[in-house]
Length: 334
Image (tube, rainbow, N blue to C red; front, top):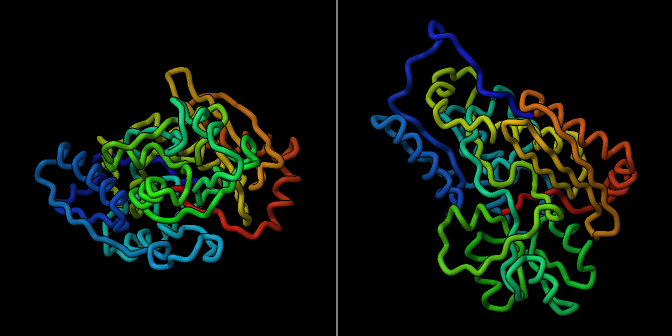
């Protein structure tokens, strides 16, 4: 679970930097997300010089199926290392790709306004994502590399063929268009941030399709000792998005442990507080658990952990025990 932005007194605050080096993956989506952060920074700090450092990650280098690579942080650990070694001042991540524990000495200094956390369907027929999935004939191929999406899909459509689906957003959309798969399930935020034109995507109802923890959010990571960066990014911070992400990451921390877990969590922040839904399931859709909790924004992390513990104690332990023998790794969800 990440720590909130640190608060420093004016006497302790270092001068704001005149130049900022941002580390990021080199994918088109990662660069687009970095451009979003850079634009927000330039608006708040017009004189700030920004340099982008592209890092090639393990997930970018190794094109085998995720199930063969194994491990977590495939798209974030190498980017994070640039901050640890001070080759970069900050790293911009898709928050859902971050491991539960950041590198020693690192914190999430900023979470900007969150984009859509929803999943969408490309392919099939119908106005809604549910109609499109229902329209697929038995045996249809649906592309995803996410254990969560696999579990949720097979719960509804055990008669479809879920296929490993690597590649960036453009590649995945192309594979649908060329008929390599009949449909694909992707994150709405990725399509929106890329500004891809002409994509016929239909949203999935979040009441069933709980997103990956922190899906749709960006996380800016820096060394905890950099009080100047906490001040620099303070104007970009969204308190509601921060509470949601802290809650969802706490849920994931309790659930993941050391094994591969198809899980979903969505915290919704308002002036009244947080309402949080959680999901844990089997990759083949054969079993699942859901629960809901609510509380104040100030107890976001505690709520996420409490929800996860409630699911585990009410039958989730059996699922986790069985998942401990499941071979496929938890993987990012582009």
